[in-house]
Structure formats: structure tokens, C-alpha cells
Length: 357
Ligand SMILES: Cc1cc2nc3c(=O)[nH]c(=O)nc-3n(C[C@H](O)[C@H](O)[C@H](O)COP(=O)(O)OP(=O)(O)OC[C@H]3O[C@@H](n4cnc5c(N)ncnc54)[C@H](O)[C@@H]3O)c2cc1C
Image 1 (cartoon, rainbow, N blue to C red):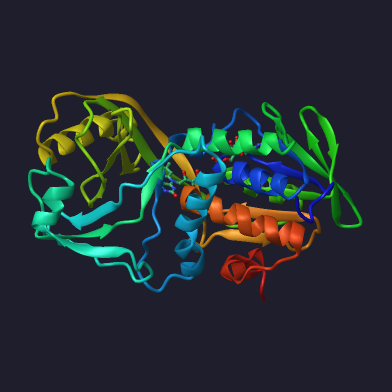
Image 2: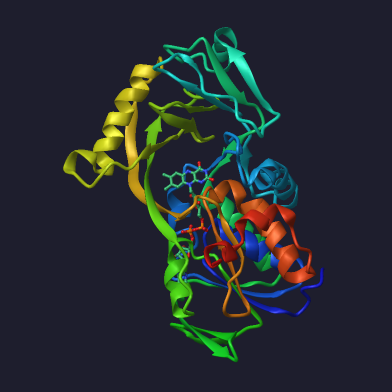
């Protein structure tokens, strides 16, 4: 138990970010209530490719945060046995130019691998490039299962999880939030944490604060296929694909527009063809699910993490890539909120940057 003992905290949002916050704050002894408008992981977390992707070209304002993201998932794995992560590594290259994409600046664990090494990692590749970047320590998870594992961990610490409970407004006193108005009534609180993904803008507007967070669409596809086609996670401009332990093939694609030919189902069929063109032995590849997910994307691309200006008692956690950062942000934010331990890794993420004259 930590310094949070008895402090009443309301977390809004039951995606992977809210679940991680609930777990970490519950572990510090806070009296946590998590409010979710629909079901757990019903937001964008439920349609995430869920690559723990810490690679980023320089300059990277959140290099410190990204650089520790894997270590924090490794820590959570030991604490939560039901949290399963496939640490397969990630292979990145450009098929068109047949060369590796630039080796990211902030990752010591990214190696340049040769064609022979690529084939060793991915024997089914039809057209392996001359070289590729291989991020050996990266992995991926099932974001819904991981969120549920964190929620179960939070509940074990005594957190109350209220699904089908939408936040409608806030109760304030002398510019401090002291309660949350929900479809189930008012909940008194000492602190509110906004982890409501693309729903955050609406919530901050209720408090008279406008945050520039866009709903950025991307397409998630899950195919039924045969196992052992893809061993790592392959990322090229043509396809981003990985395979889960139950054999399902997962792909992420850019959202183009809402034309008929660019609907998720049509993109799933096109992507299946690309995968068949790129891999030997794809006997069956049947789309099981294809959907658009809306990522909470801050206007400058940098997470928004910290106390909201103009009103006290409200802390925001809006970010992309949210799966990658959920574990570390859960820990660092809970330390800030409950132990008064300010994290330098979070300095570039402060909401105040949007309100400076
Ligand atoms: C196709 C695709 C691929 C992706 N790939 C990756 C990847 O490889 N790696 C990575 O790190 N990220 C990836 N992402 C992004 C990642 O999924 C998100 O950053 C992450 O899931 C965000 O989690 P969250 O908890 O902040 O938001 P959400 O999962 O959206 O959770 C917010 C929750 O808040 C609830 N809510 C909203 N308003 C209210 C309200 N008023 N009251 C109560 N509850 C409310 C919503 O119902 C929702 O469940 C991908 C996304 C997509 C779509």
C-alpha cells in the first residue's frame, strides 16, 4: 500500500489506459471507482493492433517515456499472470525499396538484419528484402484481454468498476471538482482522472477547458487463418501484420475515406490479397472482423498527461500510442497523483502547453 490510502479517485474510461490507472492507483491504496459508459475495452482499445512499439525516429519528445514502456510491461507481466504478451520482436522494412526502414534513434535493441536472418525469422516471406530493422524486444498483446487483466487486478485491490455508467457532468465548488454526475447518480470524489479516449474533449468542455484531441481513424482487421504463418510482427508500408497464439492473423491499415471501396470489409479483402502475395502457404485467410477504431490523437501528436488548468482536482491521460504507453503512464501518473512524485518523463506531455500565451 502507498500514500493513496483512502483517497477517493474517480477514473473515467474503461479502456487500457483507464484500466492501468485503476490498477496502479488501487495498488497504492486509493479508493478507486472506474466509470465506463459502455463495456470494458469497448472503445478504441477493442480494435487495436496492440503492438508495443517503442521505436520512433529522432527527435522524439517522449523518448524517455517510450524508452521505458517495455520494462513496465515486463513488470506488469510478473504481477498479473493473466496478462499475456507475445515478445516476438518486430521486423520493419520497405518492400518497394527492399531496404530497412531507418533504424530508430531511441532504441538500443533495434538491429539491422540481413536477408538470411530475415528468412530465419520469417521463413514464409516470398520477397524478403536485403535488410530490415529488427526491434528484438518489442511485442504485442490482446488489448481486450490485457485490459480485463488490469481491471481484475484493480478489483483485487478493491476498485469499484461501474460499466454502463456514463459521465454527464461535474460538481464543482470554488473551481474544484468535488463530484461526478453520472447516469447512475452523483459520485463524490477527491480527484478525477480523465481516461475517456476521444470522449475526453467533451468532458473537458463541460469544465470550460478545450483540449485539441482529434478522433483519428484507423482500420483493424482480424482473419481466421492457419497458424505459424507469421512469427514476428511485420511492418512495411504495404502491410502491418502479426499472428496471435490462437492462429488468428491481425492487420492494421490506414483509413482512407468512407467510399464504398474503402469500407473496412473491402480493405480487409485487399489486405488479404497483399498478405497472400507476400507470404508462402496462406491456404485460408477469412476476415472475421474489420472495423474502424478512433484513436485519441492530441493535435501535436504528443500525449496529454497532467492536471487540467483552470479547474483543480482533474488529471488528464490522452495519448497515442495508448497501448504501448498504458503500463508506464499508469505507474508514473499514479506516483504523481498519490505520492507527489513528479516525473520528468511526463514534462513534455503537460496540458498547459496548449494554454500558454
Ligand atoms: C487499427 C488500430 C491500430 C492501433 N494500433 C496500435 C498499436 O499497434 N500500438 C499502440 O500502442 N496503439 C495502437 N492503437 C491505438 C490504441 O488502441 C489507443 O491509443 C488506445 O487503445 C487508447 O486507449 P484509451 O484507454 O485511451 O481509450 P479507449 O479504449 O477509447 O477508452 C476510453 C473509454 O472511455 C469511455 N468513455 C468515453 N466517454 C465517457 C463518458 N462520458 N463516461 C464514461 N465513459 C466514457 C469509452 O466508452 C471508452 O471505453 C491502434 C488503434 C487502432 C484503431
